[in-house]
Image (cartoon, rainbow, N blue to C red; front, side, top):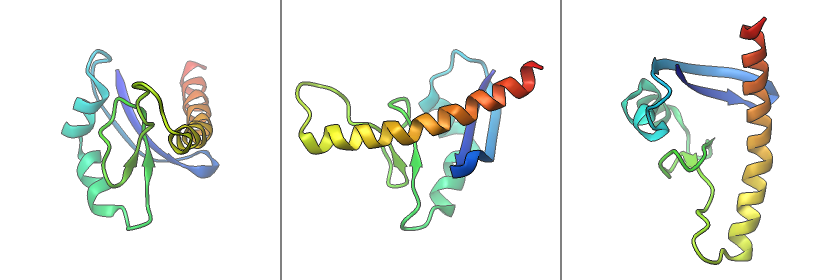
Length: 102
């Protein structure tokens, strides 16, 4: 089962969308989920969400630069900082998985 989860710092989950098998691409799940509209409507000018390369690059969704050829130092730095924040999100997902494995 595919889950899309929005979590904020301090490991708090704000939104969960469930409803597709695991073989559906993240981008398709996102585009057809209520989460897509919610983020577009509710995100303020300075609000951002983090995603991986499976998500579209939108005004309110930050994704890593794709490694095609050479990235500039600024792009590499951006990817590094984005990755360090995403590790915290992955930790939140691990906690969620552990909760349901018990």
